[in-house]
Length: 386
Image (cartoon, rainbow, N blue to C red; front, side):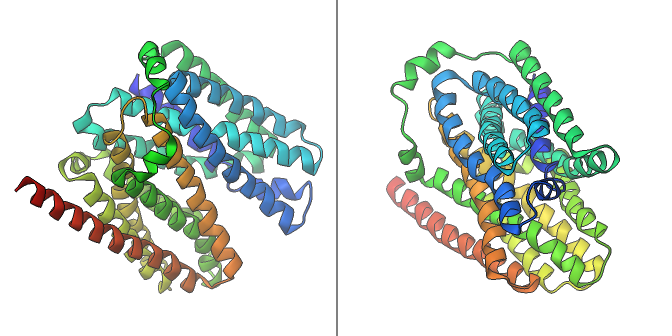
């Protein structure tokens, strides 16, 4: 059963990652203006945030399975509509609903994993889930680019649509429904979203998610500029990004993944953020391919420590009646971080050197603030026990 969930996670993220190399050229066939292309690309992340939050409420009300099956079915259907889009308005509308329905998938899938996991094994489970995301990050862009270049962009949408609808059928048939009676009984008493933001550990995971994806957005925007500025072949942008993904997957899957349940999740989170910050600082001054590859291995190590830890924090500090909203809010911060990272640095028009330093500064300042808070919190707990 767990392998089906991991397959669904891969399918959901391949849907996102396969769009990276094709959406800008596809949008240009409707309107070549940079403003329109930027609107089409950004629309997905905007509506995805809305979908994440709505999914959170519906998961806690109706159960994760229903939301997951609905999300897969609706996303598969909307992907087919890309083929029939004829005007810029059609494309923007399809893009909006694609992001909205796609926002149901990841919170529902991770809620299913968390609900089925033992409380002391959440870190390892989230590490394996992170490996599924990493596989998507490697496969998705290559799949989108290869299919689009050899056939057409429409075939990318149709193949992913078929995968989504097939996954919906598998999820409907094979996934257990869970204790729906319990979910419905508790839904009327379930907490609202604002109290979740006030929970220190959940707030820390949300801040960690935003920081991670701000760095990711900065990396996606700046790394190709760096490769171009240093006059390396453009293919190295993809190879470098794959390097960090492969590094993370190895850490997720090898026996070393036991560390995620050996050490406190918030300590692993801070370590991951610190390592990513250092990797970005080093990357800002990298002028050789060998050094850039080393930086990406370091970045992948930080990502591998951070991603499972922030997911495990949510799983460990929520109940079944609040977990859906918590994961929905969490992935809304994910989307917000990506948009903020690439958009802010794009508006500032900074060089790749300065851009990487800005992203690193945000991470390191967040680490310092969290470290001080956790240290004070630990001291207060010790005093109260005395």
